[in-house]
Image 1 (tube, rainbow, N blue to C red):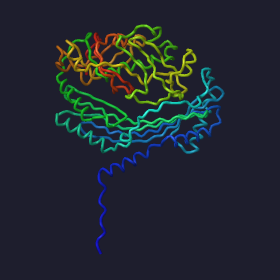
Image 2 (image 1 turned 180 degrees about the vertical axis):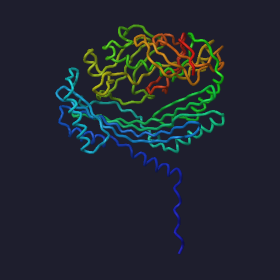
Image 3 (image 1 turned 180 degrees about the horizontal axis):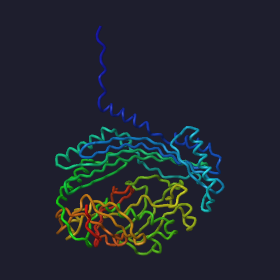
Image 4 (image 1 turned 60 degrees about the horizontal axis):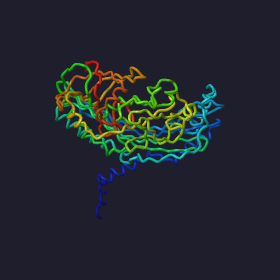
Length: 470
């Protein structure tokens, strides 16, 4: 009797595909989310009921001292219910989906609403709206395995150690599903994925940094990001101290993002109504340079985000600044009614105190590379990134903060070496009036988690106020 043949182990590729299939089971889909929303609405006896469901699968590999020291993953489903009772509204949230928990959260939202003052600006919930479809779900990102992230991190750490440098950072992947429904028959579903790699590489007296994110993990190149951060750390060794003052500055996209990100709320109709926007009494007047054009466009191929806002209004592409002239604002439904405008699909979930904001800013770029900007500069400063940014004057939009992780002196069209970091005090109005060159607009990743498409910028007369101690 011949011995039974042993089953051969599955080929690595087939095993990986099977693991990916298992990971993909976390995707709920519009059918299951609609069913959950309808179940919640049936439990409600309020005048109107709105349901916002978010399902998130998030995984993170963290490393420091050239070693992975943490790998975590979580799945969470959040159910947020808003009810309207006699012109009053309130919201309650749970992460449980059994019937008793859902009844409880609906009851909590209704009880809270009854104790709120009547809201004269409250509008009826929307009936079904037609929203534009966007494709931002990539299975390879949603099903990325810890070993895949670990291998990429290990390569970066090995290269860093070989260069006698020290690396720290994160590599994360996530999948998000959102469903929005109400008792008037509205239902919308959206899903996206997101991958992000960030690395800081340190030496004794210098450091370098690089970061990128994308819905498609295939767009993330950890090796290239690690090499870029390593080069910056090497190039900024033994930094010199130069006096503060006004310099021509070359801002890489990450630095641009962290500055112009502070413009978000100024474009809100509510901010103008409340007299807290930099655009108060400035709409239609020349404010920035001719080369500054800004729109809000959630449908741009480099953007992320739902094609509907917190009330279910379809998002519109809005031209905010046209060749230096602020032209338009964005509006929630209530703000639009007050200002006799049309809602643009930029409102936040109700109730809220902010009203609306354009969360997908896109700057029109140019054709210059950072290298070309450097070659065209007789004396200036190249900035990789900024941090600890705070607003000093909201109307003139003066910001303060510090440079870090790669600040360089440019002399005679070349980078001559690293310099000590600066604190800056700079008006965004002045900065965006003094832009001499623009790079290609790219999806930028910076200190803040904004969704923005911005170019590198060469700016004259940027104000560095003091040398920092770091």
